[in-house]
Each structure stands twice: as structure tokens, then as C-alpha cells.
Image (cartoon, rainbow, N blue to C red; front, side, top):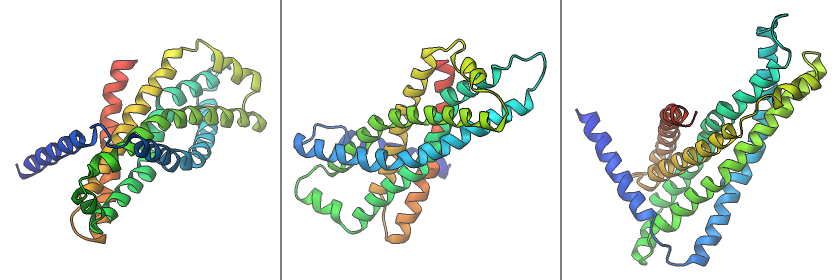
Length: 248
């Protein structure tokens, strides 16, 4: 009962914070500057880890599929086809966002948490600034803008990783290309984009809430960062079930 009450209280506080966040910025020029900065900090700085992880995961998926479904009755292009579908529908959108929840979510929560315990947020409120709108909205919109680009890069990096397995003699480039092109459904690509935007909102808004509402000292900031990653990851998994059912 106490857990349910606490969950409802947290949900209510989250909704109230989002209400303050999604209001018209006082200064559009300042908002745009912060928006661009957050896109660079949260998205651009994550490109490296996205490309590296996707490259090796694409290669491993291709190898595993080839090794486990080898059969004279199975068309050779199935390896490329299955790798493409996994990267498009699940890994590059859902699994990659789970990984980014750890990097980006903890970054947002710790940044806002530090500002809270050092009373920087209180100073903004005293000056009459809508601190939630000023600090959180650029992060949410910045991540929602850059996440589809990261997902697209993840897909291409994974397919390049699959191509590189051809040098191991597992399959040929022509077979992989045939599988990548076989019955391609453009809607699956847009499914990944929709998922990316939803997951970006979950990661940024939940992490911002955890950091913005932290109460205590440096230890509580660390706890809020952990809570942000765990909560975001769980919500992404729940959202993945519903979005997959609705979109595909």
C-alpha cells in the first residue's frame, strides 16, 4: 500500500513538473542556444559509442544467424534478411536506447541534481525564471531531435559490421546484399524512428525529474542517477511492448 501511494505521489509530481516544463520559453534566443548545446552534449557525444556497439552487434548477429540456421534447404540470403530486420525493428531502436539510458540518463540526472544541491535552481526561481522550462525543456527536445539520427547511424553501422563478416568466409557480400534488399518494408524504418522519439522523451524527462527533485547531498545525487537509469530502462521495456504491438 505504501509502495502504491509512493508511486502515485511520484507520478503526480512528475506530471506537475512536465506541466511547468512545457510552457512557452521567456527568451527564445536563449532557449535556442541551450537547445543546440544539449543536442551536441547529449547526442553528438554519443555517436562514438553508438557506432562501435552497433558495428560489433551487427557482426555478431550475422555470425550467429549463419551458424545456427545453416541448412541446404535455407536460402543463403536469409542471413542478411534476418540481420536487417533485427537491427531495424529491435536493436537499433530499443536496445540501443536502453544503452543510452545509462549514459545520457545518468548525465542529465547528475547535472540537475548537482545544480539542486548547490542551490543554483533555487537561485533561478528567486530571480523569477521558470527553472524547469529553462533547464529541462532544451534537454528533452534536444534528445528527441537527435535520437532518430543516432538510431539511423546504429542501423547503418550494424549492417557494415555484418558486411565485415564476409571476410571471415561466413557468407558473401552478394548474399548479404540480396538479403538486405529482400522485401524491404519502409514502414519498419519509421517504426524505429517513432520508437526512438518516444524513448528519448522517456529518458530525458524521467532523468530530469529524478535530478531536479533530488533532496540531500552528493550521495543523494548518485542515488538519483541510478534511479533515473533504472526507471528509464523499465519504462522503455514497457513502452517497447505496446509500441511493437501497435506499430507492427
